[in-house]
Length: 343
Image (tube, rainbow, N blue to C red):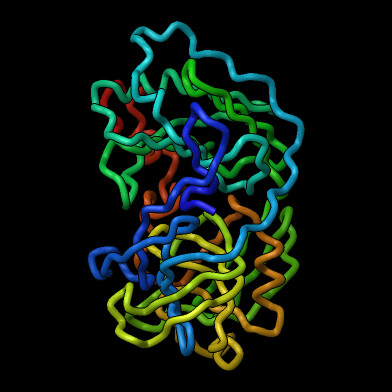
């Protein structure tokens, strides 16, 4: 799977986009070395063995997509935009595949091969049409992706998570239409202080899982993240994050939550430390007794992973950290809502 969950160019059939992220140890970007990424998934920093994680490539096929609900009616073209259609839309890429079913936290994310000039950003927003059934209020906002330049990414989200069952249609100017659906609501809340993860589905907490998170100094990101993709097997190499020969090899049941490399994944250290101590290099480790696999099979891209009790809230552009902005902060980065450049 791609870094941006089946991000694909608009003129063509949906296809996985090569990832371009950098691994991470779970610490703020300024304290983290960059590294190479795999073609099917962003390389990540997950130290295993006794702790967290870092990945460079994925070799296993992804899970089949969840069947989509019936598509929503086609989104209307923007109402008489005052400016011509921006040329940037012809080469846009979208993160959600046609007919996909995603979790309630998945934003619509549109990226461009080159930065969109500030003077054209309002026009881009006007030519991006979103229709939903039932009706949902939402807004576009320009997000500084950690792996792209300013002006290369604009996201759409409602004030709160999508309602389960919502059908969404995106029209990218005159170039394409994309339909997708919102599945059931699933949120997994990791409390690093109690070293537990509580899974809530459709409003009902139903599973409490012991975990091990980032050790002091290599803390797991705090805040709200969204499942970008997942892989049954990922190759991890500590050298990609400047940790020498601490670990390398394939590790299982990896649920990807940030472009900098945070995963919820199987970690043998969790067999001893889950629920007792935080020993990873930033990722959330689950035991090898079937716990990690069960969680992996339960989640889908777009599900919400919240971390509490930690430090350094994840940035909006580090994966899908959009929900860490308040609604007023979100609107402040919309060019069309403020008559400016979205900054």
